[in-house]
Image (cartoon, rainbow, N blue to C red; front, side, top):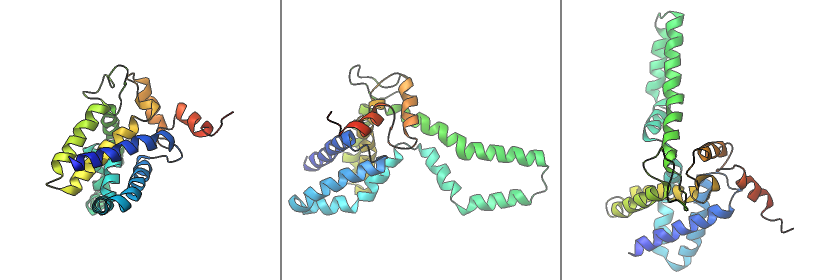
Length: 222
């Protein structure tokens, strides 16, 4: 029960931070700010949890970033950075293949390495929406952000005794969803806000419309 309360307190802090930290534009930055704030408290009040949180700081941040990435996309990304990929490209380049076939192979390669991950990641994020008024997410998703956040949180708690690192990484995934639910673009169940969210990732954290206005005017009391 104690560790559940600790994790919930960090999650609550993440919600507060995503409400006013628009200058920090990505999930990793939001997570780091939330954790750093909690570390300052734990350093004085709970040294054990201070060291535990510090030890798994990177795993939590990694989880908060990877929630937007489909597992297959992650594997493709690892493949793109592997030596085997460059070896395969070198072998194909050395083969006496007609230009049209070489062009077709390159087209398939680009589709697998870039287009497929983009499509998979788009589907991954369809569960990152939750309308508190209707209690629904996007109609194209089997679950909404709140359901997924609770599921991931429960998985993190269950995993804690077996693998603390994995547990904190799962917790990072849950934090990502709490951050999303603190963004106006994610608290709707109609499809147009999916486009808003995608546009918001260029260049920063869900930075679209209302968020831009808050970022630029929160200090203006006039």
